[in-house]
Image 1 (cartoon, rainbow, N blue to C red):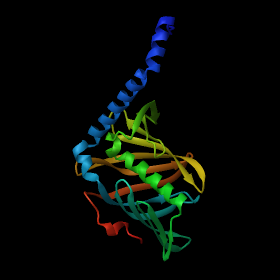
Image 2: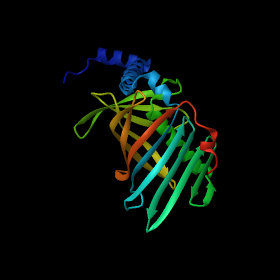
Image 3: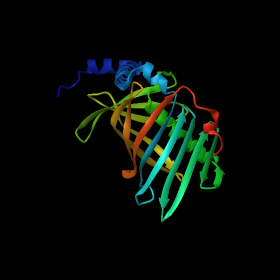
Image 4: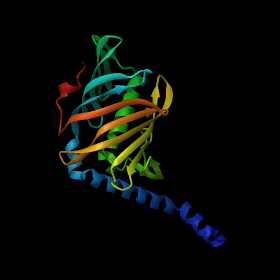
Length: 249
């Protein structure tokens, strides 16, 4: 490897201190995101998904045993969501409904309803924000900054990573397929009962819906352990959902 001369090193330090290198890096990260937007279907088509509903079925592994479930989901970006999950554990069927409506949140398990406390609500809002980032819709906003985090691999799949930062939320790392430009993986920090954990989500089996390529399969790991496997169906975009969708369940 050729060593930098003292003069070259001095120039590099001047450029770095002036912010030149950082701006170049930001420009490269923007190019990665621009490619992802086009790969997903383009900005005009992505804008159709201001809100959306879908169904999913999968398996929850967070309790140490596989727990099959079915779900009906709704989201209105950036701060409203509703999840209705039906499952069965130890021979007993149960339904769980989780609603986030801006600065309010509720959890209903069968007939028992509780309001989310401040910490649980903030964690749900962080999760919602991380999901919002994956739509690529908010990344034109100047409130977000970007940083390349280099190339990596998931099996044989070559990935390029971009870290998305904002003042109000935790960083979210997006990894795009280097060839197709489609989102392949995300990584972020989550909290469960006060404990911080690394969450990784993997996206696959893309299908075009209303001009946008949507992942039909998602796998989530927490601290390297399988947490959720899910398959999405019946994805429908909306300009706006009725307020009653996000009312107290």
